[in-house]
Length: 532
Picture 1 (cartoon, rainbow, N blue to C red):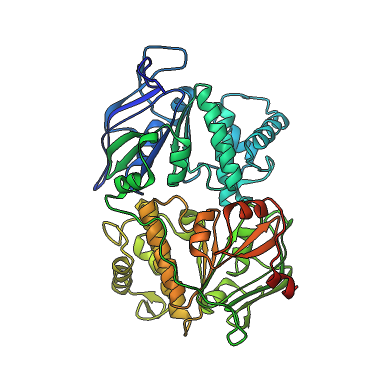
Picture 2 (spheres, rainbow, N blue to C red):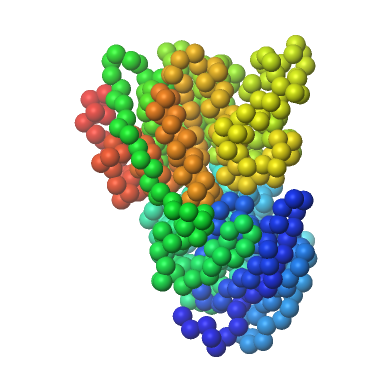
């Protein structure tokens, strides 16, 4: 693509942004042209989100300039973006990693929130019809009348994408837009982005999936420690070079996975779900006769497009959602419809998909988040009181053991990067499951454990999960990243509309087969047929 004859659609020059104790952006230069897809890469904490938050009006830079060149014009002009409204008025829109949605409003109400029109007469039926049209066009299925609090994390991300498309931005900033799509839908979105670029839109595509960078983007900028390390033509680089630029070392793309276990009659499964049925938040069927089992030393993956019952399944096996039919057994104990504390005491740990919304209390210190399942026991508990010294000592041990990067244990946990947020949850949950389970037979339920993480943090999480597997944990891994499931799982169950479409051996499965099952095609192995 020849860009020499026109200025960039957006150019950020010498951007500097400081937070207490952190230089997030260190004189960064970044430019995106109309008609191109520009990938932005970097580790968690490298400054990508800060840079894009400046461009979208959420932050003000401490130094630097922003220049834009609207479509049809040849002379760029310097702009002062003081708010998201300013950015929207300039044609800049962003889907943020941590969603900017109002939980008590509907999808349609969130989509039009902040727009000047309609001002007095809300034609919600017209809005809902346009949302349905966009949903069909971009394969982002969502109910316009549903409330945000009723939606899964993946469905909420779809709403953010639709909100951006609804506004018709000329500069589109997309943060992990394919995280909730099947491989086929991701390919379709890639083609859609390409059509948008051909129409003259400038697209900034933030992703941690290096395959997508290679396939979708024209250029790629790599940030590390707040600096622009390199801007490259995608056609002249590869995944290995990009990963090395991101983390400053060689990265293993596939962690070595030892041979797994096979459930035998000698040792019963640690987790058993037997013909379970459950309702979603709207009172509609979410799980329909779901049966599965996970043995000690095994990872069972759950694949499926967001909204097909995965969230409800995770909540059922952690005591957060009642079942209307069926049973849930942990270590031989029938825990059906028991409170969450009973599941915790049985050795069940939960890594939720929403780190800050559900997994952590963002405004509380790192130390308080780390003791949330240990505060009932001595020496942290001193009668009805907590020993602050014991809390800090406990937290410091976990910070060192799990290599959590934080200035101190007393800073609010929300200030940590995505990778360190996930390490905080892993440290707390793994430690809790060890403490409550008297033997190795414990359960770890992990939902999208690497969503939004860079390749280095993803590698660390994968190693942690495989270490727990090697120590005998029974792991239920729910992920929409099929490459992750194929790399980590021993068996993969695919969910569609609340049903298990089939269970396949991860060593013989392939992405095409799983994608078809995620779209509703049934697959039944001989083992499954024999059980039925």
